Image 1: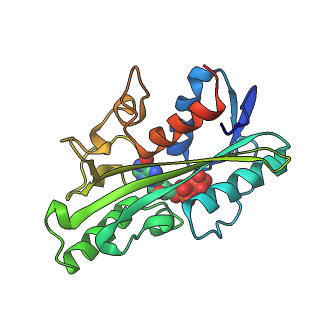
Image 2 (image 1 turned 90 degrees about the horizontal axis):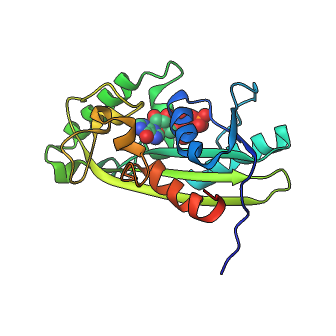
Amino acid sequence: MLSHRQLTGAVVIATHNPGKLAEMTELLAPYGIATQSASELRLAEPEETGTTFAANARIKAMAAATATERAAFADDSGLVIETLDGEPGIHSARWAGPNKDFRGAMNRIQTLLIERGATTPEQRRAHFIAALCLAWPDGHVEEFEGRVDGHIVWPPRGEAGFGYDPLFLPDDYDRTFGEMTALEKHGLPPLGLGLSHRARAFVKLAQACLRP
Ligand code: ITT
């Protein structure tokens, strides 16, 4: 059996995205790990030069672990749309631009899908991916990935969550992520179903690296 390094005590949450920070903090809460965010610590945002979600998660976690000399936890995630050749994918944050205009990014997705004649759920297949990385200052990393499948709806529905949540209808549900409560979107068993990409990756991380 592979041995995984256990996370104990405290961790730096290496994200500047408040929506992600809230979800990552909630996911860690039951494990009694103290958290501090990259924004609180005024950490610089490293350039995400990787070509995969996993590579970018590792860049962010390692940068925070090195800067703070503490364990750090990063998420790199995005929305992958099959008809758009996988875009926005690792560019999901970039599509919203410096003003984080997700309304504009969602309009762009709809325009491109219509240009390609994608009107049916089957033609609008999409999935969210989350790559999670725990990194320690000595260079050790633990990496996990989660995915949730669904399709892109139009118009966007719901005000909850963040980013592209109002566009994404997970398979077997009739409400988008934007219409779900936090518990429905990313709550873990026994209270939730561990539905989201981030929750699914976190379940793997918790099994490997956390003790209840
Ligand atoms: P950090 O790098 O500081 O963590 P970021 O927002 O730049 O924040 P990413 O580079 O990983 O993060 O970009 C991921 C984008 O994908 C994010 O900004 C959202 O727009 C989108 N995204 C990821 N998870 C999502 C979710 O659960 N719901 C909706 N959109 C999500």
